[in-house]
Length: 466
Ligand code: UDX
Ligand code: UDX
Image 1 (cartoon, rainbow, N blue to C red):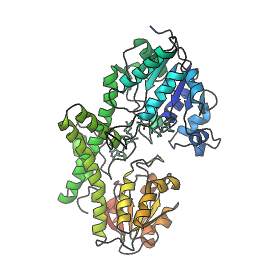
Image 2 (image 1 turned 90 degrees about the horizontal axis):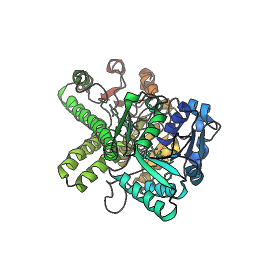
Image 3 (image 1 turned 90 degrees about the vertical axis):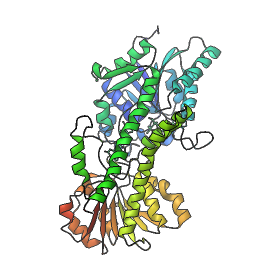
Image 4 (image 1 turned 45 degrees about the vertical axis):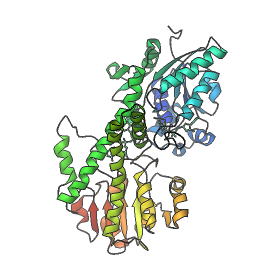
């Protein structure tokens, strides 16, 4: 039995793409709870506190409005991690858990060193009873390590300090984060302490229907997040494998999607062929899943999921090969315009974006590339491409205007499904480009009948009549 009746103050460690929007929505929906978001990155916290809401570190439709409403009322951003842990009854840990780059499991396992460090900070600064919640996606069984760290500290230092550990993974997708948070398909809470579970449930009940709140044991909750991302990514690799078959056979991926998606057992969502999945989660989580499967003596399971990543990588390679083939096998002295660098529309995030790998392939072929993206900062692209270019001596630049980017170029490759690319006047673009000019649409954004009225050569993913 824990001696807590109500949560009055929450702390979230990690002011990233997950922690920031999630806490903003909790603060908005729970005006009586003080929500403190803390992060070790001063620059990031300063951006969250910037009076100019267009400078927030995360771009998400609807986010700036919420921040404008609740910031400095019941939502606070700070780097004072210890202070706000000690003042809170409930601490979310939402720090990054990237793929490990060193030692055993390098390239596959998730690196949970930041999560461990944060747990130690919670152990140090917490007062009274504290509910610790894993928000970050982590390997199944991580809660055992979190509990061990908290319990050791508890007995070493202060017997009045007690802890409950819950898993409460986040299922929001970037670009629709606010909608997903305000109207989630489900809220998943894993744990073995019913009092703690109920206190967390009470927070969500401020806006979420009770039937949408699922409670499980800790391990089911941790594993469900990995399983969920693996299933979603698998659908993308499945449809992408068929996009290649469509191109070879004369079938059309949109017609295929409709034909299979109307089967209720398959469902219509997440069946868009494209340049492969990007984002901070899918690849990292599947690599982690394959690592765990091997660790638990299940190599067949590991091999099954690994294939999802292989198809994803192949899809990017095959798009590059298609561009190269259509441009007579050489990209030297050719200008290629990249339309879209974010890993999906409506976000400024480029983590694991298919654009990175495709641009690198093109630069490897000595192409000159000009990148346009309506939201991604040039400094991000700089980080994503810089070292590579130094090695390969190719060149790239960024343009804030897609028409300028298209000027004198030999090919345009659409890599992100931004709205503005849907409204492009292809007759105007045609006049700007060097002939013979190509447009490669990897997102099925363009209506083929429209562009075919121009003199542009056109290729579209999964379009059998390419
Ligand atoms: C992160 C994880 O990557 C993901 O696995 C999980 O599901 C949710 O949290 P995201 O919010 O997208 O996702 O990561 P990111 O935008 O990198 O934000 C993490 C923040 O944690 C960064 O601002 C970083 O500075 C901060 N951090 C990291 C700390 O405050 N303390 C640390 O010790 C480490
Ligand atoms: C994903 C999960 O959807 C979310 O539940 C989890 O919490 C985090 O990981 P996110 O990566 O933000 O969210 O975006 P998502 O919409 O899933 O897209 C991931 C990638 O898949 C993007 O590159 C997107 O373009 C691609 N995608 C998605 C497709 O290629 N086709 C589709 O049909 C859907």
